[in-house]
Every structure is written in structure tokens, then in C-alpha cells.
Length: 165
Image 1: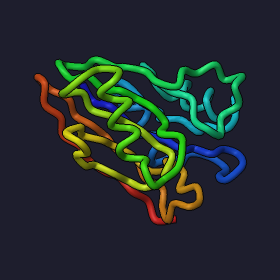
Image 2: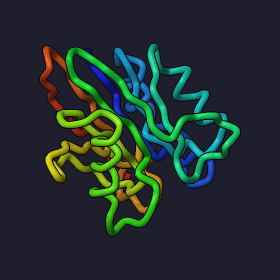
Image 3: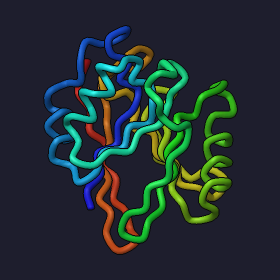
């Protein structure tokens, strides 16, 4: 299974569109994960239209009318991913996201979040956390970034992709 992992589109209030190079990666993925902050129904529909299979969560800048859950769980090839935006203050962001992952799925699950617009692949309190940054390079990001995650037989490989902004 090959996942495209994106977050923080912020279209149209901070960016015009998802870069075409990233749109191609999203179209090619087996499953797409968006960790929130589409900020418009059009942005949600754009990503949904690119994705064959799709998981998304509500971000702090999203209108409630998008109807997305605050947390979602995805099982793939023996790996459990917990997706949440990570809304709240930046100073306790990593610990807060790790706590959500443990609460939702227990030990061994991997967290996918957004919110900071900064790429992260780290272990926090025993939980691996992935943050793909901002798929459009929306401020405060310095460039557009996303991740692809190869999942096979309970193991993952993570690649960060970036475009200069």
C-alpha cells in the first residue's frame, strides 16, 4: 500500500492551489490522508477528486460545514494510523498528538497530524509521529511539502517530498 500524506492546504486564503507535482503523487497513491486545514469546500473536493481512496480530518481553520471528524483511524497492511490535525498551542503539540494516538489506538500506532506546517518524523513518548508540513507551502511554511508512506507487512518507509516556494 502506498499512501500520499498531506495537510494544511489553506486554499484559497493562503494559497491558490495544490502544486501539480503533488497532485500527480496524490492521484498515483493507493490511499490519500489529509490531516486538516483545507479551509474551503472547494479545496476538500479538489483533494477528494484526486484520491482513489481518502481519509481526512477537521482542522482548526476548516468550516464546520465540511463535516469531517476530528480524529480518524486507518488500518493498512498491519499498521494502524491515527489521523488528527493537532489543533492547539505549539508548545505542547507533539505530546498532545502522541496522547491522542495512544488514546485512540494504543501502543504501536503511528500518528499523522498537521497544524504546524513543519515536516516531522519523530518518536514522542514512544509514539511515531508524522507531519507532512503544508502541501501548498502556506505560511508559515517555507516550501510546499508532503510525504509518501510505503506500507508493507507491518513496516513503513517514509519519504518527504518538497518544492521550493
